[in-house]
Length: 405
Ligand code: AMP
Ligand code: MG
Image (tube, rainbow, N blue to C red; front, side, top):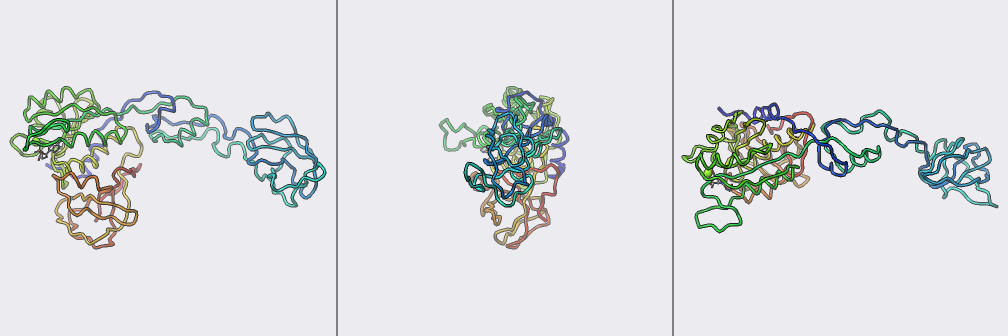
């Protein structure tokens, strides 16, 4: 029996193990998921320091001409202290000397007879960066499950962290099934077909941070399938397309079952792509996607993306949606949860005019998809719709309602 999209996603979230970890230099952690939290070991800034090139002063000297006792540079140890009627020249990042109440920037003073004439008003603490105002010692500055980006690397470096425990890259093995298929680098006869699904999945899985392996193509026999499956088994995820519907030569599921796959679902109430199957051989997750290119792509975006996100250890593994308007009147068949590819231009979402399950060309034009509930048969121009981004990700830490009603 077919499970609903929501049930299928829940099954994936519940049964997919999180990948193991490794320790890497922070420079190699870009795009990885943090395996634990990072706690600040010291305050940032570590000491009060100047936010400007200027003069360290006392507020009560405002409006008077003071004597300059010397200069403090970034990196200096603050040996000097500041007396009333005096000032110390100070550079950005230099430690605030004892007794200093504010920094007056160079452009706010005039030099008169070797003295520094201060402005009439000086605010207490002006242009002083205080110890711990950026990161307080003891706070969690990177949470478990967060994706490492350039800015988390900046924080790690600012705390003197050299290595970090992160989740491993997920290994994905991909193959297509079908006697009619040939790889794109071979010659074909008029009734054969280039395998476009496998290169597509390999590319998309890489975009999603996985390590990928192309394991060739299987013919339409249980033996041929079993041979290819066996050579794919060192992966964390095996992805296949084709051979999962009702055809006389659709043996994909049988071959996987023969090799011990536990099936969690084998049909989803979704259009296109009903025969999508999810299972596991030991700890290796398996997704059998439909052969039709657009159907396989849609189901990859909904289910495989969720699987990769969950396995990656990300704390934001749920699909996030954006609410926008539909660009034009849009009639739909209804009856099933249906996925429509379209283009979001920042203002509205325009479903693609022709998108049939067997097509290839609509996929590259789409940057978002809408999942319409079964009761929905017409959307009037300007109606609010929920869209899920493709290629740019809007993942959430909480599961949300992803259907347009
Ligand atoms: P199947 O589910 O195996 O019956 O395949 C459904 C349709 O998708 C057929 O027209 C296949 O030729 C086509 N197809 C299957 N696998 C691929 C693939 N890897 N690349 C492109 N088309 C495919
Ligand atoms: Mg086939």
